[in-house]
Amino acid sequence: MMDLKLAPSFSVIALNAQRSLHMTTVKKVSLRCMAAAVILELYLEGCFTQSENKLTLPKEGFDQVHSALYRETVLQPLLHKHAEVKGDLNWWVKKASMLSNKQLKKFETAISDDLKAMDLLEDIPSLLGSDMYFDTAEVEVRAYRSNMEAYSSITENIRAEILEEGSVTDEVICMLWLLRECGCMHDFFSLNEIEKVNIKLHDLYQSNVWAKALLPIQIRHGIELGIKRFLELKTKFAKTFIGSSINLLFPALEPSRAVFIETESWFDNSNQRLDAVITRLLSYGHEVKVMERGSIATLKIDNLLYDAIPHFVMMKVPIQGVRLVPKRPL
Amino acid sequence: MSRQRSMENILASEYVSIGELVRITNSRYSTLKHYTEEGMLPFEQAEENLTRRYKREETVVRILWIKEMKTNGLSIPQIKEALGMN
Image 1 (cartoon, rainbow over the protein chains, first blue to last red):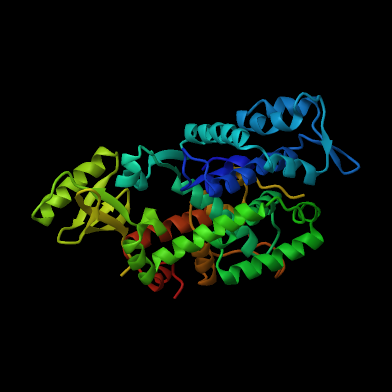
Image 2 (cartoon, rainbow over the protein chains, first blue to last red):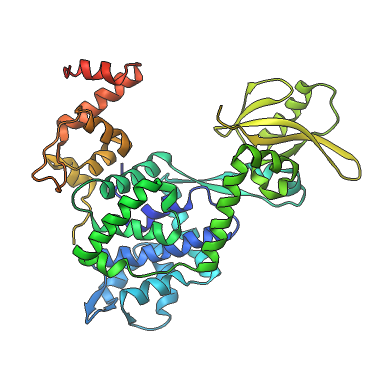
């Protein structure tokens, strides 16, 4: 297990399962928090000089910034051509979180390249890209996948520190703040645990100088966070029994949970149809294993189980194929 | 301000926290918490509200041993028996 700085460490969590080629609203929320994490990382490393609550990045700080490209991509837009910029912590993190789409994309490329070089992040084809509608529209869909060992080590360490008795390190306070601003608390803590975390953060706010400075700062964008929550609710609904049945009838509701793979021709038996689907999935670069054959086959695609439900869509002519629906737990 | 220890420092220290054990053994926090509550991982704690400290070397060996027994299909009571706790 290697030591990671704050921004790469948070990025391993924040980029996992995000689309890599498109700037979705959900990814934008993550990137804004990742950019803020760069400022916190520099602050924790003592790159800023502080006078009367104002933080300045001196010459030595610049040298440390240039040591990593992802830091440079966040700080260059903030500094413009000024030799020195002054502001309190609130100003710095807010400015970093308000980078334009173009600047965020540049930052994403820099940090994802770093993580890929360390084998902590992969760029894999998303199953949604194999959907007939996406494929024929030539929309390529790829997604980030974090190294699961690193992901679990980072998240479990946060959980251990905040849920246990005793002191909490500055890095974990930063991580919790970033998770809160990213709207991800519910992904890592149960409702009961969130109550415990709240109490602990409240105590930290009263007793810890760093927590007192950081926790009141808010960088979240209401509309973006609202859209993220709505999409999460939609996905959650599509995972229920009723939701998945409705989604099968109206796949536009949650296309990723009812991917349509068409077959080249009409087949009169399920085995031929399944073989045609497998050939097509393999050609898109997915790993496919047949778990169970039959009229509704079970496939393991990139380590996830799917039911392949025979289906057809009406265009000028009917097109035969299967809908891949994530298998519900028994 | 209290900073997170580097992996080098953790691996050189005699005592570690549960968060650090999570990092060095790649285990889930809830798993180690459960083992601690079952008495399978001995710890020291100066006062009730202070951090629990585990002896690094012997606890890591114990966690790896427990993991191996779990892989071999032993249940928690059987593992406790193997650890000489019953």
